[in-house]
Image (cartoon, rainbow, N blue to C red; front, top):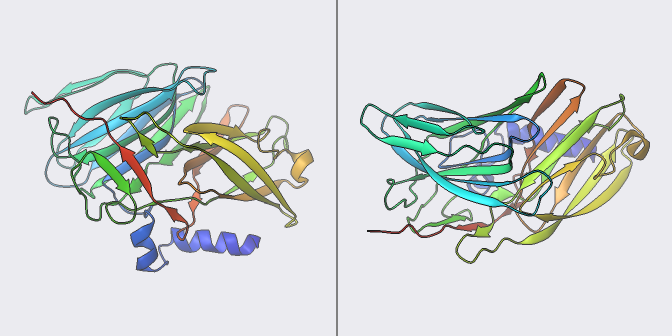
Length: 309
């Protein structure tokens, strides 16, 4: 079982799955019209987001930051913004600080800072800063650097490719308008306290939301766990919008999995956007998780209307 999961992940990373599967679930190795950043942490660290417009013409992006203050994991603050990217422009923003720029064409990009907040962010290509209707623009790529206390780690923004995009202020990540996200991700890690002080965090967010009705589903995430001896265990956790599960939450300490390494695969009825990172002392490492290409789940983001006038 362990070898099968790892082999599937490696094949997907190499882009060897059939085109039909890639047309359904987002391709992590390609540019997209939507970028998802599952972790923005300006409480424990400082988070810098980077993105680039790879096309030879300008583009506008709509964006949302969904964050909570320290200790209040169910009290989310949601703020939208727009970003103007010129052709071939790399964009760099320390999210703890406000961003303000007027470019050569006198177009202003102004975004508030998000100090002492934690959560996730997503951006998508739009036609302009007035109507803000979504467009097919598979020229976006991005990554995120999280640093603090002498430690740092990096992950790539999760892209979604446009398929038949309709400008209606609704993002349908359903395999028809945009590619879907997966409901099964696969993670390998070191058991907590295998070396004293070794910790780890599995970060999950969900884009499934209705900004007009203020609806975000709650659901369970199931964790199928194997240790190095291929002994199977399971975990079941409740989830709402954004959460960080540490190795204590997931019962993945050395005295619970009994081998230095573990791996797990999630199952859920909803799509997941996730990363995994580990720390010990002043050292941190982390990156994207593997996505199963055959477990796509349709997701809808209903965006708020833009006042006209």
